[in-house]
Image 1 (cartoon, helix red, strand yellow):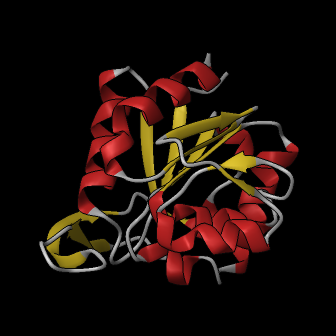
Image 2 (cartoon, helix red, strand yellow):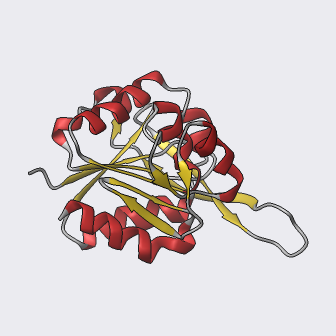
Amino acid sequence: MSRKVLLVTGDAGDSYEVLYAYHRFLEARWEPVVAAPVRRRLHLVLHDTEPGWETYVERPGHSLEADVAITAVAARDFAAIVILGGRAPEYLRNDASLLSLVREFADHDKCICAIGHGIQVLAAAGTVKGRTVTCHAHVRIEVERSGGVYSPKPAVRDGKLVTAQSWNAHPEFYREIFACLG
């Protein structure tokens, strides 16, 4: 089995979610590969909460080079795909090649993971229908409209589908991912 994990993000991906994933997989001796719509330097952002705000705030974050374009990837070369959150999934969910790739991972019965707003991509790909998942509370309606069952738990594993609400659930999320990977 491949020891490569595909990390999908783009401009406005959440810095903490992206960099934590990259380093966590390296630490566990997996090979993380960052995929984006185009192979280039990505502009990530930081999301946080502020007193008195009803939603999160966004600030400029770190930069990161994408290793590969989404169109150059095949599911057969990876053990899992992780769709990272932030604002990037808002536009990535419209990328037909990414949606096809997610379905390819499902067809090959590989681990499919999403954190925060990353669930938007899975919903658009049709992979949450009939599945129990979690996500950022503000996109719960997309899960339900796509036929998924929303769970309020910080992280959820339904077969080989692993989801988490936000970076606050990193410990639970990565325990479930590594259990899925065996």
